[in-house]
Length: 307
Image 1 (cartoon, rainbow, N blue to C red):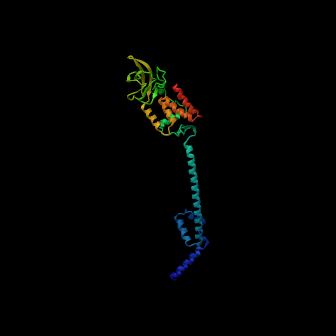
Image 2 (spheres, one colour):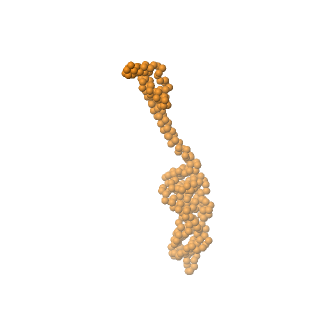
Image 3 (tube, rainbow, N blue to C red):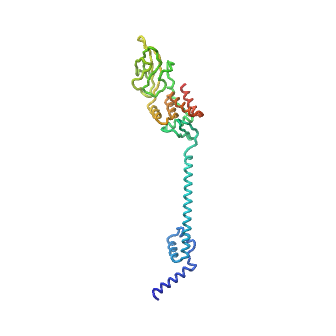
């Protein structure tokens, strides 16, 4: 038998074998191959078989097309689920991170919110300590420390409403003022809290500016006497304190923040003991919030300290 004859016989035998029903691939093998779950051995069997079996080859191709559609649908479902999950996380994150708002105030056209856990929103340019102070004040804590409040009532022998300074002040080089007496000449003395001389001067005007800055965090007494016929008659006397360097820097920084926060500044002034300025800022806050009991309460508490 020639080589060509032998080859023809083999092809005929193979053709007869592959058309036999018992030699077709089973469904499970085709399904695993189409789903790309077959191991290396099963892949070789399927690939070798479909190279010879037209019927199984067609069935494998149909199953592969179905598996591809199923994978695309599954990918779309996963993508949709992921998108829904992301949307839910984005919607719930603010709720999870923040507590419910328990207090809201208008402050120079901004909204300040206090949450249930004591956090603040809406106040810019403040330190953690200042945030804690505002939160405490809004929740009804002490507005002015006792150590500062002791300086708020000046020891004065005069009821002159124009005399200044008195109480706690920010300026460390203040202008001393009093009501003028026609034709009078005045002597001004500034003393330490222990009544040691600090500065003095003579003027014809009813005001006198200290020549140098005074030390911060200290208390002083100023006296004004009228000079006549070589004698000095005491007219006015008042005690005042100058805020510490730390308090001064805090207030000056808050004054530069724009937009200005009446609440933050009012409480900073109050803690430093500068009552008039604290009342000014908290009055502005109360005017912006006419229906707010909290804003009115803050103002009444600072007014109570000044009386």
